[in-house]
Structure formats: C-alpha cells, structure tokens
Length: 377
Ligand code: KG4
Ligand code: ZN
Image (tube, protein in one colour):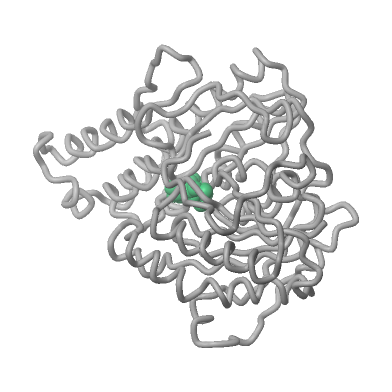
C-alpha cells in the first residue's frame, strides 16, 4: 500500500510517498526558514503564505520522485495538529480536496506521534537508497522555495519492535512515551514549560547565534568546553517530566555576570559583549547539560519498563551529542534514522498513514476534517 503524506504544521511544506510503512519512495521538503531568520523565529503569517505557494509543487514533486501517478496512491495522510493554525489549514485543505477529487481514503495524523513512526522506514530491500542525490529543474515559479536536491538517506536495517520507548524531542515537545503498539501508548512524562528544542532556540538567541538554535548551538559547541559552566538540572515531582526554562534563565544570568552586568542587562545586547570563545563555552555547557537531562530520564525509563527498542524522534534527535551520550549510557537497542528525517517531513506522516490503514483506523471525513492546533498525545 502506498500512502501520500502531507505535512504543513510549522515552516516546512512537505510531502512524501511511503510504501507499507517501511519503504521510502520519495520525500520533498520546501522550507520557508530563510524568510524567518531575520526575525529569530517562525512568523506564523509568513509560514502560512509560503505553504500556499509551495503545497502544490511539493505534492507534484513527491509523486514524480516516487514514480507514481494518482492511480498508484492508495490513501492520503495529513497532519491535523498540533501546530500553527494558518499553516495546518493549508495542508489539511489540500489533503481534503485531493481526497475528494481523487477518491482516496484520508487519515488524520498527530504530528508529534508521527515523528516516532519515521523510524520504521528501513533500507532493507528498499528503493529508498535509490533516492540518491540529484538535482531537478524547477517546474514552476513557486518551486523556488522547493529543495530540488533529492538527498540520499541512511536508514536503519531493521525497524524498532514493541514495546518501544520513545523520547520525542522537538521545538514544541519533550516527551517520554511507552508504545505497546502503533497508536497504543502511555505518556510517561512531558515538559512543564519550554520544550528542549525551544531551549536550544532561545539560548542561541541569547548568544547571538542564528535560528534554528539546534544546529547553530551544535556548531558553536564544537570549539567550546562543556564543563566551563555548571548549569542546574530541574527536579520535578514526576521523575519523567522535563523543565528547560530554568536552564535557559541560568545561561542568561551567567552570561550577564560574565560581562560584569546584573540581571537587568538586556538579553538582546548580551551577545555583542561576549567573545567567540565565551559563546562556544556557553553553547557547549548548555548542550551538555540539556542532553544529559534527556538521557538521565531515558535511561531511568528504560530500566523501569525494559522496552524491546528505544527510539529518539523529533528535530533534536538529529543532535550528535544526544546520540553519543545515549550510546554511552543505554543498553537497550536504539534505532536511529537519518538526521534529515528527524526534523519535520512528509515521510513521517505517510508512514503513520500506512500504520493507520493497517490497523483499520477510522478514516477522516474529507468534507469536514478540522485542524486541531493544540492537539496533544
Ligand atoms: O521536529 P521539528 O523539526 O519541529 C517541531 O515539531 O518542533 O524540530 C525543530 C527543533 C528546533 O527547535 C531546532 O532547533 C531543533 O529541533 N533541532 C536541533 C537540531 N536540529 C534541529 N536541536 C539540537 N540539535 C540539532 N542538531
Ligand atoms: Zn515536528
């Protein structure tokens, strides 16, 4: 069964075709990231407008890259939440329209949960490795936002197995979830305030590093000393909950005192007074403690629940320091996917659609599927 997945919850307009939940046939992502950089974060109106421009060329490109016509597509899956309202609307309306016109079943997918399912894409006997780097010519003017390079992906050889412990870490979520099966899970813990990706983004802003903060903190941290500053770890009633806003404030206060100013010194002026070496030390020390906090709880949950597999999902799962610390401390097999599939994409939605179809999940009504911006797990 081949499913077309459509994702538009934030600043990526994405579509992909996945077969049977394991074979990646195509993956196309157009990001409006460049348009948000000068604002230091995603501007919802700009993101929504970019989705409108990109959605049709992205879907066309995903079908073309998969060598599929509409006759080959068995179902459509779309993110209906959580996310930015205006952004979600574009994807959902496109999917509803296509489901009606092309007479395909429609599956409504939870974006956060879908991050986990992208880890089920494998490279065994898969044409996925045929998706090699190559460049296509732009098909129409809106395609200018489209990444026309088909990347090659490094996928795991075998999928995770249940029970599966998932650490879901993105710009909007930090959660530990125990899955007994697809769509059957227990939420063990979640963030009480900032998500870990959000903390990377906010600390990057304090240090004057570009958005998104994850990759720029990682880069700056390469030249820094992770033990230069000791930041606190939050203690919470539920041992599996997270809190990152105190860590972000600790970075701010330490940076203020480092330049001999008090807490009233404006955060947006701090980076001008920090040297490159200080920025690197802050980046490395923050990253080290943020990652250590995630791994502490992952290891604790793995001991308590003895899962068969562990999966790390969401944008922050691309972080190499996180992967290194997990590999050094966890004894349960961990399935990692290609870092390019950790950030938002259509493949995760298409994979979720395949599993929804396999489990005979109720399809969505294409005439009235609504977006749910604050959808939770
Ligand atoms: O999953 P995602 O693409 O979007 C959401 O669903 O939120 O995650 C985006 C988040 C951003 O906060 C970004 O800074 C973070 O993932 N991120 C990283 C890395 N790459 C992206 N954080 C740490 N290390 C990275 N390499
Ligand atoms: Zn996401």
